[in-house]
Image (tube, rainbow, N blue to C red; front, side, top):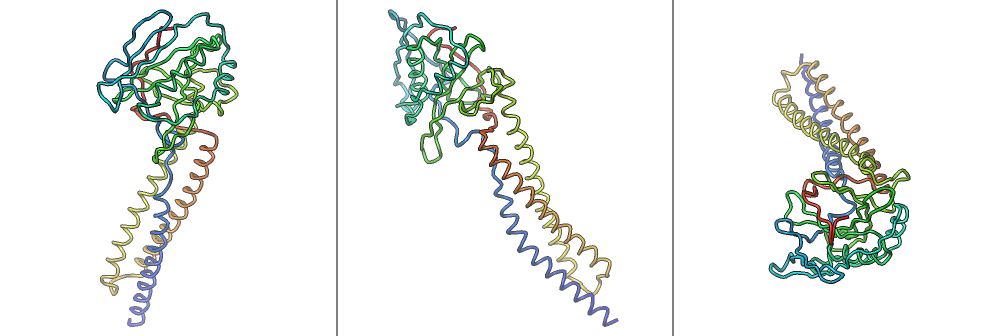
Length: 319
């Protein structure tokens, strides 16, 4: 009987050592798992708009050959910007491919973004002037967003073969305040997510249809589901770890009452826990590789709910 007790005590100590060793490993592993990167809603940061949506986007005054529009400043309430928009005249017919070529080789998007000094309104106004010089049918577009006190300004260019092409020249702003130039063709519709496609990554099948944008975003949505699944796996691993620690404490509280079957069952749980960590590690690495490839291929997710247009204004006149 004493020999059996010694064997059982030895087994309990051995299992305790395994769990202690596994605890050290899993903490390191779980720490890594908790750092799984999320898929950004944008390549680097959210672009900053500068149109107030809780008031009129702009007030306009018609003058000979131009419209003068007044926009409220964000940082200086009561102060305004004044922009002059030449009234469209003698607009020519431009195909989608020709408009994209014009956008691709226009470099006015490379200025730094500074709120109330040179922000989305200024980028859109400059592109409006540049397109008009080429006699491209173009409009300045003010967008008010749902659930956001700040709107956005972009451009609309009319193609003869694929309808209105919305273009966003506003740079990204990183957390450090650095501007990152961008040129996006965007999908804009009331009550739908504001979707952006970098012009350098437009797919060969692109024809400026709603399906083109959602097809491009489909991979990002798929990866996001995998990310959520991996996070759930992590949560389950944490629950397993806590349960094993509690069971270990119970077993160690009175080792003389533990049977061989209990020791074997506990050891199996430890082995299963090891396997779950290995699987989570593998899934984490696969997911990171997929996200890295997705970023390289410019897959993105739709903007969050604050980037759902509720009002779209064409200026100075509708198409």
